[in-house]
Length: 203
View (cartoon, rainbow, N blue to C red):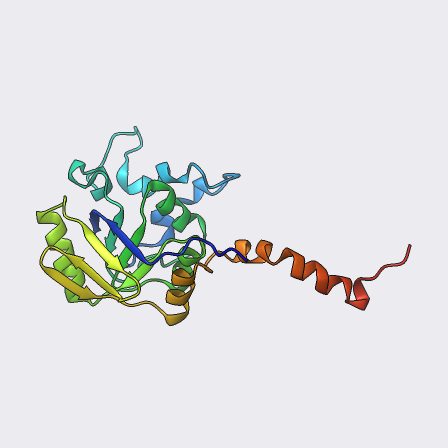
């Protein structure tokens, strides 16, 4: 079986997004859930808090030129709370975000992120505050997150991050994509199915 892509480390520039309890309806408004595929959801990320009704921009980190090209989102407490819509992490991934570092995450949101290969890691509130301040002062800085060591390094700082052990193992081993895992085991599944008496139908 060929594993999904192994994710052992992530590097990129930060986008600080302060605020607690940023829910999934704010991440991706409900009217954009009618899509057939997730491909174009990135353009609607945080749409209602980024744009006015006439399409003009509001003040928001994702609209700030100094954070353009950032791929690591820095958030506060209980990010992704609210409904369990999988469109929320999909819109973040499709926007170009490769990782989220935060104080805490809603459980279902966190699981949905792992399922699409979007790593999230947790850090202490003091470290998050320092990281946000550092990013605001030096938006061109690079953050390097080592998932094996569970460390994030930026500037002269190195902070501890953590993940549930099962999530860490899935990302490092490349087994986070359950659909890929299922399709990779197609031959074994067919073999077992042939020997199940209740699947043997007579014409």
